[in-house]
Image 1 (cartoon, rainbow, N blue to C red):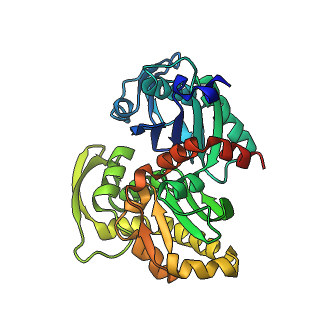
Image 2 (image 1 turned 120 degrees about the horizontal axis):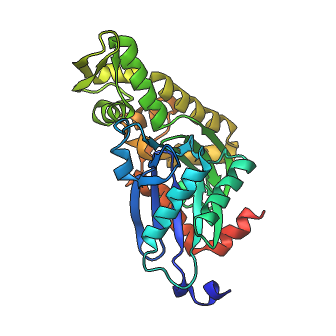
Length: 340
């Protein structure tokens, strides 16, 4: 009640609790924090040593007594205790000038999340210091964040490729007409690249190197001029350091199964879309968000596969976080929606 009467007493927060990155939106300030969802802990007692960017630098480089872990997997909590510590750290960071009341928190979660997983997220956020926690579907948050008019009686289609999941949804009148969440995203692509390097060259690389390859030369569609990159790793046979050069065509081949799964999910959504709404998409097309939408040519790949125009949102990495911020501005409406 105090929070409603005196909103200045509390810092309300929106969280994009991603597998790869966590973004925090603070009411009236915008997105104030974006860091990797990585936590470094002492192996003996699970005491947190580092969180975010500092912890990510430790991935694959920690001594025996310290482990750098990703507590989120496929968009949901894999390690309850470590996730809670990570959330507490980030909530306290953005509430360093803490007001009289703990914050209300809106959290974006995958559309395919189970009730058990939903409760785990809510409990983690509450235990981390929130006054209450409202969950909002990730594709809905993403659609709001990119500025789609989801309150109108027309079809809005969003494809959000995150670190752990790809969310495909058709939204109209503030409701999800159809949604599909597949557990394929940036992490799965990194794994595919690492496996390809091992299979093709007997080269062992870590997830940080695989991610760097994806960002620097990854593509979903043939490029006018293919890119090359020097890669360093360990020869799996000789056990010695090894350097070689690879090109974007090879990485496209390594990621082909991931791209096919994303295309299939989009096609399924279009097949399930009511005819009246399908006609809207001929003109309005598909909007892409999430870090995966930045892979070269993925918009063109989807456009060729569907025959529809495909647009990559402006600042796709923060779309979901900005959507949680918009939900904060109208939180009573979204609480009512969640109770339906």
